[in-house]
Amino acid sequence: MTRARLSVAAVALLLVASQPSSAQSAAERVRASYAKEEVRIPMRDGVRLFTQIYRPRDTSRTWPILFNRTVYSIRPYGPDAYRSSLGPSTLLQNDGYIFVYQDVRGKFMSEGTFDFMRPHKPVKRGPQDTDESSDAYDTIDWLVKHVPGHNGRVGIWGISYPGFQAAMSTIGAHPALKAVSPQAPMADTFIGDDFHHNGAFWLAHAVAWLWGTAPMFTDSLVLTRRPPTEPNPTPDGYDFYLNDIGPLSNVEAKFFRGRVPIWNEFMQHPNYDAYWQSRNVLPHLGNATPAVMTVGGWFDSEDKYGAVNIYRNIEARSPGARNILVWGPWHHGGWARVDGDTLGNIRFGQKTSLHYRENIERRFFNAHLKGDGTDSLAEVTAFMTGGNEWRTFDAWPPKAVTPTPLYLREEGRLSFEPPTASRGFDEYVSHPSKPVPFTAQTTMSMGHLYMVEDQRFASTRPDVLVYQTPPLENDVTIAGAVTMELHGSTSGTDCDWMVKLIDVFPPDASDPNPNPQGIRMAGYQMLLAGEAFRAKYRKSFEKPTALRPNAVERVRFDLPDKLHRFKKGHRIMVQVQSTWFPLVDRNTGSFQDIYAAKAEDYRSTTQRVFRSTTAATQLILPLLETP
Image 1 (spheres, one colour):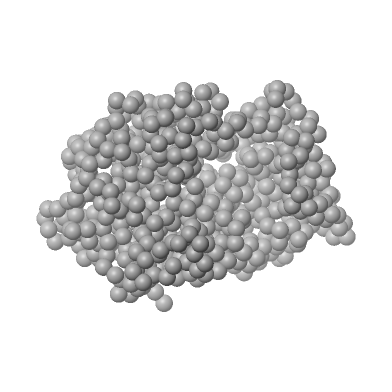
Image 2: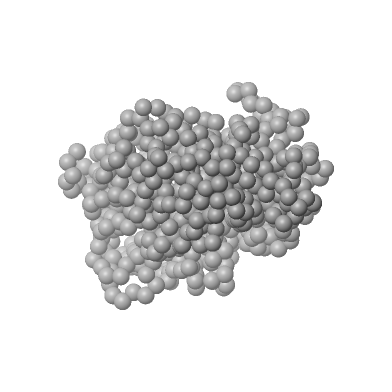
């Protein structure tokens, strides 16, 4: 296809022709109840954003507006091409709203230039100073002035990147904006979301996301189609990234080859410099006036950090705002897409996603956009895994939580009693040529199921340290972030630390029913939470410093928030390792810009984890009293 401007009709033919009949029948049901219009809404700087408006055909009453801004295309295009569903759920579609969808600046049919997580401009000196919050404001202003049949109230929702855009709409919000739901929102992609965690580069996710999305960050009014699937010599991501690609410095030449310019932007900013800091949403979330409901998944492989920290920052910076948080046992966006009764081999005993859509999300938007603005929802609604029940709290983490150390001890033990020996450590050799895999699956993608995967495939490796408690005599419940305080050393001048918190099932654990794959849950090591930390950032993410070879260094970082019950008879396990591949790119073992490293720069290192009275490595659990 030539890189020429496409008419709306041509775009519609490209994207709608292959719709399956089931989608067409669903689209016909939408058509029966809604009339579609496509407009180009001018922003304050003159750039026009392509927008679709679906208005109820019932004109006997007024309707609120529910709005979604996205980088992922608002297809299908064309006034006669209808979506197969509207809104965050069909429940709200059936309740009746004016649904609005918009291609954000520089994407698909919208004009302008796309900027990844476009930095916010707190001070706007003229119409050329635009950002995501101003584009949301200008769009809402146009809608309330030009769309007939609305009731004067607007809501915004979005998942993942659109969740970031939803959060940005709360900044200097339009007076008509009454309810916002950032769901799995990106907040800071160097510290904890998507592409980096504590400075460690999330390789498999970054490459897959940029390959699938970034090539479309191109010309205005041009639908640049995704590139064809790259012919890989193997479906095995471990082998592909280790042997076919090798160092990060090879990705551009061997894989992207000029088609993903944002990759090169990333590679030019290995530290937490102004590029990443300016894209951090959190400092700007003050004085929010709409009601805000942030949604996160316990097993979200992309944006758990954004969910909890957007909630916390609105809570701290907008004390008068209606600000609530919802947690569920979901993968990335799972609350909107599946029933939510299972994830991989784990069963939750109820359809948690259906419960959320019916009893939480629907109630939130209807109350603030159709009702009196009183939603009656708890400050925090969270599903407790392990115990498999919904809980409510008046704060997150709950006020009743007690931080309690769980110590790494000799002979692979975990204990609530501190070490008694003045010396003691465990060690392993970490080989970048033989990194620990993050999953037992053969896959090219990061996926979601590794978040609850059985870790027995890793626990037998010599480069993974394993510690566990005896079978628990009573239930142990955690609520909040789990903090790792690790005292370790490396023979090199840099290293990565990966820590995994695991729930070990007892020998008499019941197998799934039905169980077509023959899964055995006896002794299952369920990954509950895992996190990485690049040790050169232990003092500063902005200014990394080398480690002293074989010197004991303290590293402290959080594992993702959880509400989980380790049941009586289960064990708590911790695994410590220095590679987690290809989820996380390999550390060279030396203090340098890893983005520019060559194959010969990678060296094996000896890693030590200390467990003594003076260097007590511990996991600090947020214990919640079990009722």
